[in-house]
Image (cartoon, rainbow, N blue to C red; front, top):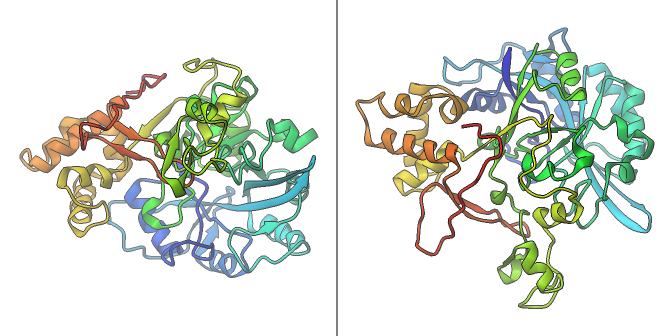
Length: 430
């Protein structure tokens, strides 16, 4: 069974998260996007966990299904299943350096979640944020989770971001072994994050055994699925986690990625001074901002360059492919010359979803001729189809993100000065 999964999101109880991140809206937008399996998020938060238990029921296969909830979604779009998940922040000192590492936890049942929470509550509060912070090492966290159930999974989140990631330039490690010690061999996957894609991770031989997965880390319903992972297996907790553990290319078909340049930590830079630097430029300036001379935030590309032991363009034999996307509202936005969340663009977006199906189907599966001709060659549909074709070929225009500032990816050029960013995708997926 082929399905799209997004394991890492946040609920309305996480900081800086939309109040609309409740089960009803998450389910509705999962249908709009075409996501079949989605993380519950934030199972450590007591109020959210109570809501999960009231609105979801275990399906006997390690996943959850809706308990008779109407989502007000488009009728033809099926409702998603859920997998119990949460993100935990560990902030601690190791080897004379402050470490800040975020981890995604997957669990097979509410009873296991209750065991995990009963141990975490001994270490600190769970009710102040959906993504709690603990002053314990990731080794301690791994042991605590696995004592609750060996069926759980710990996956380092957004593995390359500078401030809160296992490989982060400011507070991370140079290897999984340095972070997890004797348990490193039991870390089976990492999350690529918005600012990196699989091709960047392929430059490290040490990650050849690791399954690279992608999730949205969504803080609002429309952001669901901005990154995701596509499976072809039984939709059960065991089959999914076994596919991840064994990096089974027959069961994990590909990941869906941001163009990593759009991530807010792709390049180096200093946002206050509006300075964006390539790794080469940063080295030229000795890691300092050329305007104010303060240290720049070293981004993901620089960090990958530093740890890489392969040249760019090498594809490992067991690599799982990926496809990079531009969200449909952003393509429509360029066509109509209005903001992606404007009434004009949103009206066109939902019209296309109603007529053609979920967003992922439109972006990844439909022939462009099928997009262009549902309304007797409506000019909007023709232009959007052209944009999707350009996206699939990587024929786009890019201004990289840096120091917390999202990059800009455009399907069509907006001025003559924008650098051409045609992407040469190693896998030739399109």
